Amino acid sequence: MVKFGNSDAFIINDLDLKIKIIDYIFSIMELSKYRYTMLENVQQLNFLKTNEHYVSPNFKGFNYFLLFYKFKDSIQKNKESSYCIAIDKKNLSYHRKSIDIKKVFMYRIKIFASSSIFMGSLFDTKLIKDIMLVKDCYYLMGNNTTDMEMNEKMIYLDSIIANQFHKEYCNNFKLKINKLYKYNMLDEIVKNVIPNCELEIIGLIFYPIKSGVSYIFTEKSIENKTPQSNTQNIKIVSNDSYNMIFQIKEFLSSRVYSYENNCMKKVLELEPTDITDVYYVYDNESKLGIAHIPNLKVSNYCRENIIEKKKCLCSFSKQFNKWIPLNIVN
Image 1 (cartoon, one colour):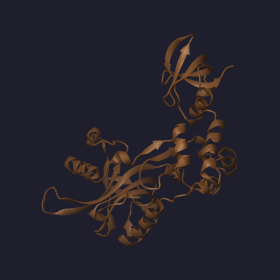
Image 2: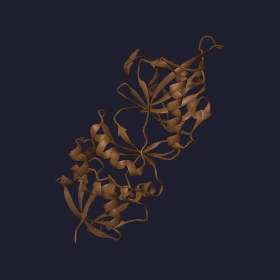
Image 3: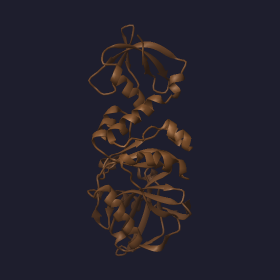
Image 4: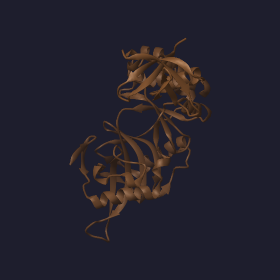
């Protein structure tokens, strides 16, 4: 037994059962199509600009798949038992062959719901203290839900929880549906949601209109949750998607990163390539390798300023053993 949310849960150590659980998930969906990726280059920003997404605060918590299914009893082969299983996503992979089952933590949760829910339901969730935030649902009551419009799906899931789960359905946590915002509501997130939320928010998540690839925007400045700081430092408060994307770029440009104050700096030459965020670094015509582009700020600066071979002040990253471009030197 282990503490999970507000109450205890059973740790699943049965290797055969864990294999069945993972195999079932991969049998109903292709995980690589439904993933989260960091928002870290200009191409992704332009994609968000031209393909409107929903936006939500990125709450600090622990990511889980929440699976409802009936598995055959290991002892009584003809008997099926209903399981609600929280699967820690930390040691999962998008590819079945890459998963080390022994390292994947799974917990059996006691939860009361209709038998229809246990026909096969898979939720993408985040445990935040005693709240299990439902961010998406890929399978519900034996049906694929990846083609449902995201906001409509959230409304539908809210009604499912109200009607298919018992009044006191779980001691561990309360299921809560993620609230989605459109681009024109970013002002509401920045000025009201982030400053007044009791939960820790570590950025934003951009969700597609239907289940797919979501983009995570995490900047430490967002963690400062005083109303004054947010209105001054986070300028993503536009009323249309075009300006919203470029105001994110303005915000990134204003942020100072630790490597910018690094004492190990040198003027080097950078040469652009045909590949996004790939720049060759030269020191007196001697090729040193490829520059390290750590974030959107550097990516955007290089794309706009290094269109041909130029001298650039760089900071050395010991972690990556590469040079990070800072600014053009005339």
